[in-house]
Image 1 (cartoon, rainbow, N blue to C red):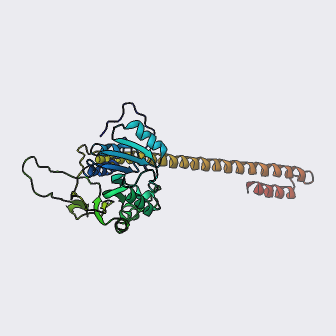
Image 2 (tube, rainbow, N blue to C red):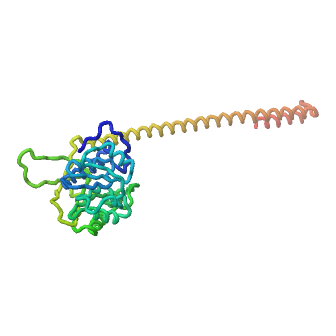
Image 3 (cartoon, rainbow, N blue to C red):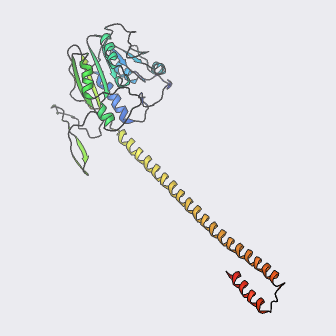
Length: 343
């Protein structure tokens, strides 16, 4: 891979649309790098068009083996970034659309690589028509795309950058409508263990699978593909590997999962503390409101008693002007007023 230019600027960011080599997403990095490294064996000594070349690292990887590589992306800023970061005599970048490759002559390329591009385009037949035009006789199309059922439907997931996702049958039919021969491969990121021969071990590759189910580990069958990788041609298909493994012995995908778990735990504890504080504050406010209500009720009773007493005193004064206190009517009146005052 041509080395990145020293001090080259990063003119694009990791948004989820185009992978960048500094993205902190090990799974996505595994998927993208594996596809390009896998394709290196198919482009040796050939003229290559890398459609939707993105950041440029994939085109640079292909340039290690190819006679020449032209990376094409629809975004001018992305192409500017690629040119600023990668430099090799057999590598160039251009702005263009996959549905319009009129800038290139017929039979201009021996291999067209189009990874994670076709689902971004609504008119997919136009892409294949243009690819077939610029491919030399017997040339190869190497293309990948998410498998819609596993990628979106089963996960209830919507990728905002995708225009038209395909199932395995739809993808195969799309390619088969333009090319005579199509080989199809499944890709899915895994965590596991690898045993490599240091001596001997010349037999076929042994594929083993494990799953956690029902609270225990058990052997498993092949999973549904999350991504589909195809090689298509109007000529004869080249020899293709039955399986390919990309290994990261640093276990970054596991480290990322653990980091995310720790972040979620911190978020949970922080939210829990916030909710407890909020409940305590509301409880305190209710208690204070209840205390204020009781105080107000006591004050009201005292005020009412005070007003009643003042009215009774005034009534006594008026009545006693006409009736002697010591007379029988005066004594009876005093008894009645005392009862009203207590009530």
